[in-house]
Amino acid sequence: MLIEIPQVLAPDQVREARAQLDAVAWIDGRATAGPQSAQVKNNEQLPEDHPLARELGQVVLLALQRHPLFMSAALPLRVFPPLFNRYGEGHAFGNHVDNAIRYAGGAQPMRTDLSLTLFLADPDEYDGGELMVDDTFGVHAVKLPAGHAILYPSTSLHHVRPVARGQRVASFFWIQSMIRSDADRALLFDLDAAIQRLAADEPQHPSVVSLTGVYHNLLRRWAEM
Image (cartoon, rainbow, N blue to C red; front, side, top):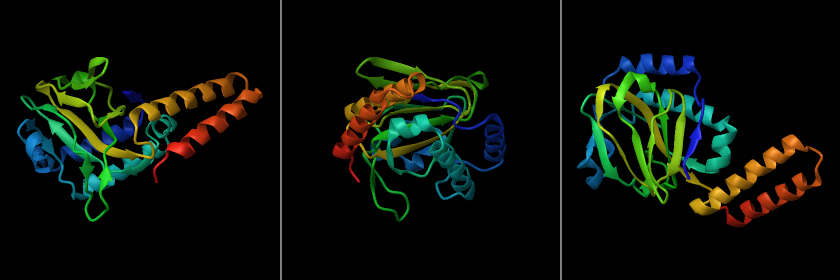
């Protein structure tokens, strides 16, 4: 299930973040790659412990916590602190699958159920650089406006196409969901969306309460805490 999360950050937030990111030093992106990914990864990254990474990461997380679409689609239990990368001309990231387990500093390990990429450069700022996500329905090319994000299963084979012009700047990180199964998460997401539509069209309809009960009982049955 690929879900576009629009307008996570407002334009002024994106401009401020880009100004700060453009003013700091970046390192080789392979510093955070696993042995296999490091062989196909060619980009730059802000060090995980950089104060700006922590500051902007908090901005991103607070924005997502207020975004109902993200909360409904991800049902987050734990979130890895956001990272930031940059692809210049000739940079790319070959086919790979994200590590199943991630460690954030001294925190407990977390399972990566979902991956999120938040675009911080508009599509007309660079050529190429599409995020290509392979799922059961084929390969999807993703290149969104700055401030928008894409959420997709971490089990997906994916890559970033070479950048031919300009710079592709983004934040990326992982989420452990309360619902381990992507299929179960998709079912809950669809049910939640249907309840919201019914509540908007017929707020007094008795099925709103009944379906809400079904949603929460399924969540109660499947959630891992």
